[in-house]
Length: 366
View 1 (cartoon, rainbow, N blue to C red):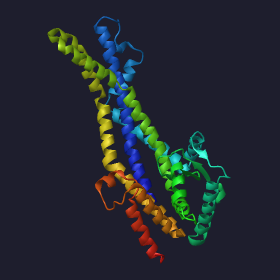
View 2: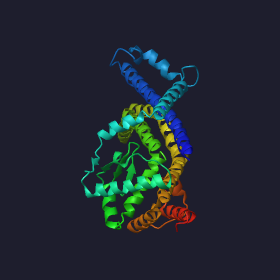
View 3: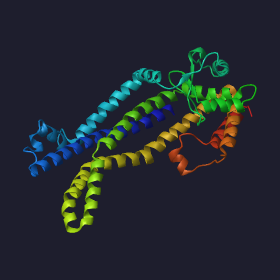
View 4: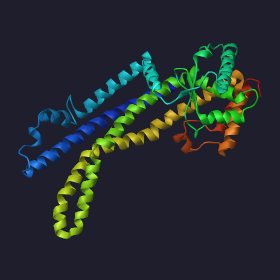
């Protein structure tokens, strides 16, 4: 399943990277078209004495960008080569583990607060972690890193019940989940242990590595998409169209004044069209193909982490947790739905409960 998770992710990465480089080239073509529009328009109106072709490096830039359909140095050629280089760098970064260095650097500037070792919550979590460490060794013959090498950082979030582990051995509960666990916990700390064992399961299965790496690459992709939205001449197009539309109210004279502005808006829209098509195709393909596949593997990660915790003896704690969460959120829905298939990265508590009960019965621990 881990191979499937990595394969699905890199398939998505290849597609998104290709779309990303197409988007970068579309952005360059937009500005090339905008440059021609502005300088050649000003030259036509005799406001300036030179055209866009007179600009330094203009012919080189045009020949670089306009060879769209064929030739060794075509538009698609640069997009393909850029994608392959980007993918190659990402594969090397992932295989060599260099990305962990970047994670630590980013973590150093995060707003997470380390839980004081003297804090009763920290001591409770550490005691639960020590027990999990011992059970993993005796029951599954798995040697975990020394529990003292794990750290606890609290997320400043009072809204969401969340708990996750980083590949750098940092456990991060939200304030909300700590409050919730304390108020719903039993004397033997079964909920703390169950949640911790589940997160350690993600660590053992190396789910955290691919997920953390995926987040980093997603940020790069998001940066380029947002750059396209912010730097592309969309606002200028809208302003020109609105100004031209407003002038049409003036009859024939208004039409004469509006015509240049409407033409500018049309040309700007045509310049943006390749990037708009690229973004639309990228979003639809990701939504209907890549995201469901990633969510499918993500749900598999949750089942395997539940199984790890159950095999250590914390299955009942997970069942109690899911039951309490359903009551807290007023949610007891189960079964399959296409909406969940496309959107949910986690299985329903109903499905997880059913899976845990089956595993507990199989282990002879009803």
